[in-house]
Length: 257
Ligand SMILES: Nc1ncnc2c1ncn2[C@@H]1O[C@H](COP(=O)(O)OP(=O)(O)O)[C@@H](O)[C@H]1O
Ligand SMILES: [Mg+2]
Image (tube, helix red, strand yellow):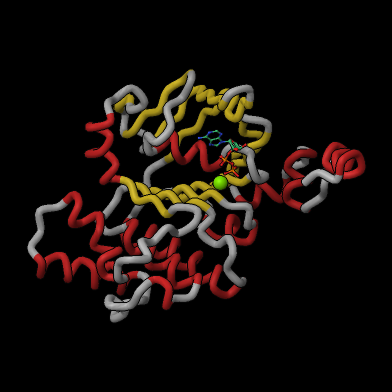
């Protein structure tokens, strides 16, 4: 049974049709990478998976249970089984590193102070940062902040970890540390992973499977090797970083983005 299943998911914001019938099964223990242009709807897909956005049409399932129709209170409980690494890291600057990682544990668990300290140390060790509990996020580099955010995301031993652009903004070496961590969490914690990225080196390295979102639908679904063999023009353009005639037209007409 898939861990997550999206069935014919449609989502519009006003007149913007972002998802136009998305179907996918995430298999246990696998890391699936979702690629696609900025604004394609990748983050919107992640938010459907954790119940932060509800589909207009279609359904979302977690371990066989339909979850897009359940209430917010049930979702709050269910969400503890997911670890979400947000696009911008989003640490609380007013809290220490230790307090940041402890946050979901304090919120959802019934642990003693000593137990919490142990879990925090374990999770920071997992990301290679034990010992910096008393630092503030502002004292850390971008790569360290991502790793602390990742330690926080796995604080409650999630079954599924969602990574939203985990390597964006990092230099290639720091980005690779994050790639290695994603692989390590899969290996050691056996989590099912879903990674949103437009970093193709990262996608190839961490992905058991790559899916490309384009025009509100998936236009590619296969292994990293299959991606290189895929002849679909939309996929090739993205992989090779070539603008389409349409992209260039908007540039000529009004100097658009
Ligand atoms: N809550 C929202 N309200 C209105 N528009 C949204 C909302 N969330 C996303 N969008 C729009 O949906 C499109 C896809 O967004 P997103 O999933 O964030 O793209 P990306 O693939 O870059 O992650 C964008 O045009 C974005 O502005
Ligand atoms: Mg996004």
